[in-house]
Image (cartoon, rainbow, N blue to C red):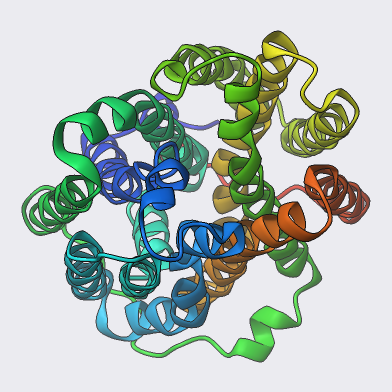
Length: 398
C-alpha cells in the first residue's frame, strides 16, 4: 500500500510548482502582450503593411528558441538548471529592450529573435521534474500549463488597455521588467535543485524513441495552430463587430470556462488511469475546432467564441499532460536533452505558426490556415492512437 502522505504534494513540491509556474507566467506574459495589438500598431510602422512581415514579428522568437532549446536543455543537464535559466532570462531582457527601442517592424523582429534566444523552457520543465515525484508531476505540469493559459487570457484583457496607456514601447519595457522579476524568483524563491548527472544525454537515444518523437510532433502541431490562429482571430472578432478594446469579453470567459473543464480532465487522467483517453480526446477537440473555423469562417461572434473556448480546453489539457508524459518516459540522465528537443519542436511550431500563417493569409486565403491546422491535428491523432500511457510510480509504504 502507498502511504497516505504520498497522495499529497509536499510543501517543497507546492513551492516548486507555484514558483516555476510564476517564471513561465512572467516570461510568457511579455511574449503574449503584443498579440492582440501588434497587428494594429504595425500599420503605423515602416514594413507594417506586409502581413507576412507582421506574422514574422509575432512568431520570430520561436526561430531562435528552435535552435537553442536543445543546447539549453543539454547545458542544464551538465551545469545545473538554475544557472542556465538565469542566463536565458537575461538574454530575454536584452531582446525586450531592443524591441522597445525599435522604430520599424524589422527591428521588432530582431528584438523578438533575441527574446527567443532565452530558450529556458526545457530547463524549467526539467527542473520541475527534478523537484517533484511521479505521482504529482502532472499536477505541477498542470500548474505550469495553466499559468500559460491564464497569462494568455490576462494579456488579451490587459494589452489593449496597457497599449493605450504606455504604447508598444512601454509593453516591451514592461516585458523586460517582468523577466527581471522572474530572475529574482529563480534565485530566491525556487527550491534548491537536486544534483543532475554531469553528462548530457545522447541525441540518438532520444531521437530513436518513437514515443518521445510522437510527443515532439504533437507539441509542434499544437503551437503552430496556436500562433497561426492568432494571425486570424483578432481580425475575425473585429469583422464580427467587436472592437479590439473589447476582445477580452471573448478571451476571458473562454479561458475561464476551459479551466473548469481542464481540472476534472487532469484529475481523471492522473487518478483514474485515463491519460491516453483524455489526451486523445483533446486532440480530437483540436481537429473539430479547425474544421469549425474552416466551415464557419466569419459566421458571427458566437460561433467564433464557442470555437475559441473549445480550443482553450484542448490546449490547456495538452499543455498539462504532454510535458508530464515526456518527463516520465525520458531517460533520467537525458531528461534535459529530451525536453530540449521537445521544446525545440514547440518553438519551431510557434515560429512557423506566425510566419506561415501570415504567408497563407496573404497569398492563399484565411481558409488555408484552418486546413493546415486540421491536417496537423488529424496526423497527430493517428500518431497518438498508437502511444502507450506512462505508468505512475508510487512509492510503497514503509
